[in-house]
Image (tube, rainbow over all chains, first blue to last red):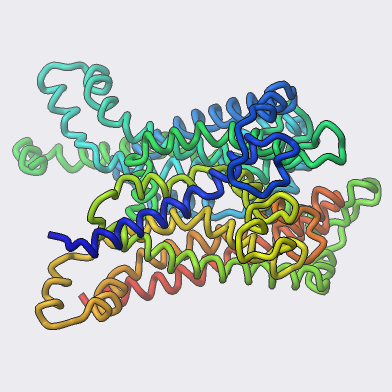
Length: 274
Length: 311
């Protein structure tokens, strides 16, 4: 059906896209595997040494940052998914005035520039003791996690055949059974997808983490990376930064690759249908 | 159907439906309230407080000198050359990166749309930049162009002392490259979704009428994708205008004029702890974002109205 020429061209196209996407990842991985005297060799592959990984995993600051990142992103995801699921249920299933206002309000919040609130949060958090704490980051993360979750979940909930719930009740199920056995399994994939997207966003944040934390108590990985110094203050810890970067990248890439279909559906559903 | 059932029981229906409507509205608001309140608390209140701070002389190094100064912080910002050069830098980065992303994203979307085989690996590959932490990607690019350790100066045909990060145009190029690399996948996916909405029959009909591939792209695909393109542009323009992470990592210190407005806000607020002046910068950035959004919504509104008129 397709000519040999088309197949060759297409294969080249795939190769170009793969190179485009993977070069920086391969590069930082290769840096992380170099020994200090190989860092300056400007080569893509110069052998495999896990020295840099030993450095970052014996660094208390990095371990603390990893725990902070995981905990803060997970809690922010949980809270925003619960709040957004309630709102998305109402937005996709119930008839009420104000629906358009809430949806456009959420859109406005999604476009909000974080730098505009960094100064006031910095001042307020210092006054009430939230500066450099987990809640001090989890709360501002709601500015981008909530709108994203509301849009993605509403788009998914609109596709659920809600009549099944009534059908189950007609067949003798209690409302709770109908909800648990019918609606929860139907809604779960959407909720799961929204959770992944929200988690990636929270995990990625740099501006709040950079401005609202100052110590290992709440500093997340992106902020810790930016302020990472080597064994001596003057040594540029390229290898160690690269190793730390690889450690925080690998889990996300694995997650993205496993759930790629869902992520694509979630990303476009929220943007196009919303 | 419900109306027919209700009609059989006479009198009651009207009152019944309004009661049900009322109950439904109440439930809806109760379900939405927590999310709405949370969004107001995290944006509305701080932005209001930022506006209040922007009217004060308030430097955390001299907290006792706090006093109301009206709009003088705004006058200071708007009369400083730093603000205007940072606005120019931000606009340059935004316009160039969003334009490149639109073209690249469109090519990737068209390629994926017409995939012969291997659609899965391509989709997986373009999701990699999306998933990576921006700070990590920025480090990868900075190290790639580093004159002592980067692979780019080590490439054949590239001079060994190639060091784009030592001057402004070179740094801007690397920053734009990092921005484009990271966000083109998002653009491509939005455009791909838009592409799926263009009916194949139109292309078939145009083909029969003798239209070339090029004509079909510019006369059929592009006009029908206009709303999808505008939405993607709106999202990305506002996002690029807020650029912070890439610049912070790729050109730390920012002594050579690669500051964006967000970096300026950060420097004044956090490094110089001048909350009054910094809040004026914050509010001005907020106003810029609103202006950009209004512009796009106007264009978006007229385009959908036009389409409705034509249909």
